[in-house]
Image (cartoon, rainbow, N blue to C red):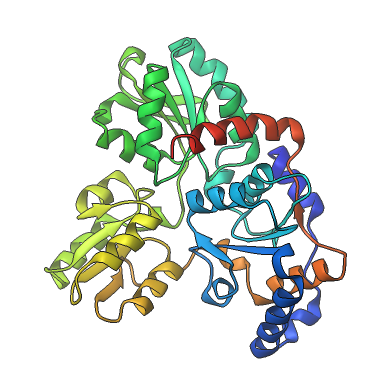
Length: 369
């Protein structure tokens, strides 16, 4: 188990049962009062994939890049409550001051993609890959990764990327080295490199379980090594879903997140980050039709915000991200009341050695966006 994840689990506190018996109205009333009482000492961040019941109380909402920048810019709040998942709260902790404390309302809110690349597997893979490719690689990690993986990329001169800036960061990485090791999402890495002109046959998948490179190519032809990880939500969209939309709604445009597979991105009309999807739909003409391939909470919110447009999910039988949905009103209320009572729960702290190297990776990204 990754050390940062183990640390989180050791700090985990369980929601007191009485919070589950409260009505939504009572919880909302108490949260509203707590926000007023705590004032500028409190700052609540909400990722786009959160439930509406939580988003309504967020002081700032955004995708991974936006929230990383907001965390870095905020120097005032003493208590930052991150409604998202653990890797996001880790990033906020590393980018804020030592006087600021970051909390995750429910420690079970993780990310299956981030968990697909732990530091032990990565440190085992690196020397094997160096034997194959020598000193020609630079590591990049999607921000959907643990602090330890971010630190690994920082240690070896690499950087973080988001779905918003992946192209720019991959270009930067190729200006430094001949090859890229891209962690932990193979689909974002593949889609980004392909759009920049890297042939699919010049990409290979590293399987951390077999410790083998999955490719038919000789090593000298490989430009991108993709970690065998994925987002369980976005991998759920298939080419069959795009074909069904084409048959049922021929005029409908399909827009998907680049965490979807290469085949789905190729079958769609457009692809881009969460922010790109939101902006594209917002700027689309009234009466236009869209099928969106991303997390269901966000799709539902976009539908509500644009009643003048025909919008559906690319897979209407799809569920929201389960780990994102662990943050709910009872956990948010508990987090705020524990802060107000002087006994805050579920604080996220990244050890300083890890944080120093991880910050170097994050800072290389933030300087370019």
